[in-house]
Length: 142
Image (cartoon, rainbow, N blue to C red; front, side):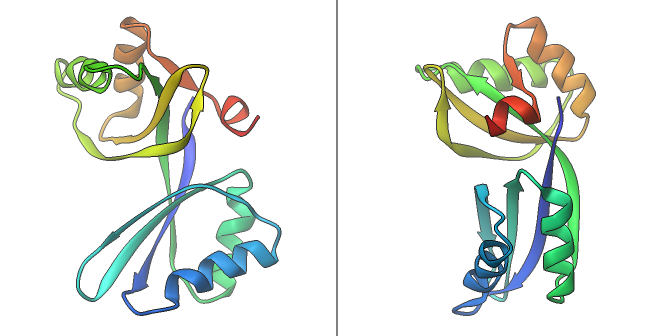
């Protein structure tokens, strides 16, 4: 139920994000979702792609240091309090959310959020207890 996310640092200059997007596009790798956080000099780009191993290779060949992390994509009721229910469940058992970002599509009538937890397995157990739907890689890329 965990999904692989690749991340890399980029210098915070015009064109640097496009460079990685173009490298992936030229390799016929589609970016399913992306998060970009920046500081004054560098940014962290987090990507979810179907073929993460090939994407990692393409980006490393282009000179980037690429990290792979396990994340969880959870369906969240798209109503007031939907996200709060998720945060309550993992917080109640001491699981920390290291970061999260929203997904650009909906699954059924729900929103989809991507979470990086400090204890993903524990988070999955607690989220399933409250009936949260955790997406598999297969469901995510359908």
